[in-house]
Length: 405
Ligand SMILES: Cc1ncc(COP(=O)(O)O)c(C=O)c1O
Image (cartoon, rainbow, N blue to C red; front, side, top):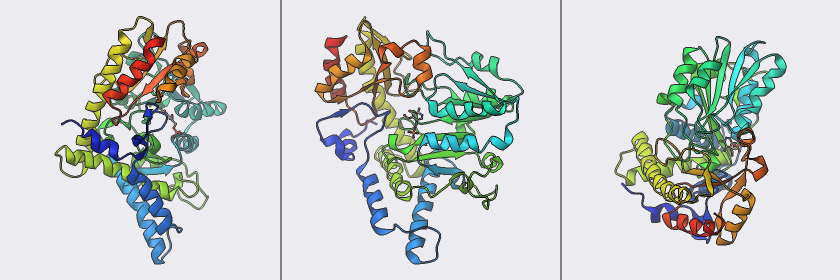
């Protein structure tokens, strides 16, 4: 069933303005219901959690409700949900919590496609004798080939870190297949879900990852992030909080300092929203509603991506940096490209007056842009859409791009 775009857009007050927002992989617009929840938390329940007096019971319950909502969203158990300020911070915590398990000579595999958030924290282990290997994409096809992973993995590999979708290429990586290779070698899999989570339903029961992280501010919520980890794996991690937390104190030993309660509570609004989309599509409650909501989201994204890609493919001056497919299983609605004889900065600045927000650069996937030799072109032009973008907005973007291509 097609998305009710009038309903969708009415849920995001910022969309009533004159700008078309197509830098969503940098941060999406926020749902009114999220902002209302943040405000309600602060104005009616902002006391420290964990005490016995009634207002504290209320704040405790609200944070518990948040953990339950993300568990439901990811098809997981609330005790497996670690909350934090950002994906970058959570991956640093995860890396720190692995210190006790990694010995000199152990190996970690990272990719050159990932955002630095899922590379830098792992490279820090090199100082302790851990070997970090790079799984590089094919520079012609931009694919992370599974044979490449197979040739790197060994009996010393403890961890493989890979992004679910690239925030530049838009490519969806085959996580279940990657997980099979990783687990056959006895290693664990850490997946960065930031660039995937706004676009498709998350299901930790079928994906095959051991750790999975995403940022709520890119999924229509506030600046906040969530990490899921398999319960037995989380238990094995070091305690990175105060000394008096035990190893069994999961997930709290991985949440040093107070988490942001108002954002935790606010982000429930995004779960609620996707479920409402699912119910509107005729699904029942719960997981079925989340999956149906995302099925409609994916279809809308496919339509707007196809419109943009068809235009870009029709221009000889354009090189798409990523898969040349807009199929739902191949990519999310993030499309990057370069233009012959023009720097990416100039292309983007020519679009600004049309009030369409796009962007150029390396987007912290620095190593990918560097390896592809695109730094001196000011990186790529990136158009990152979500389901609230419309075909009319894409046409406005195309009209604004046309003179540059
Ligand atoms: C793929 C990817 N991973 C990680 C991050 C970092 O997220 P955060 O800002 O929550 O640390 C980003 C942010 O752009 C991203 O696109």
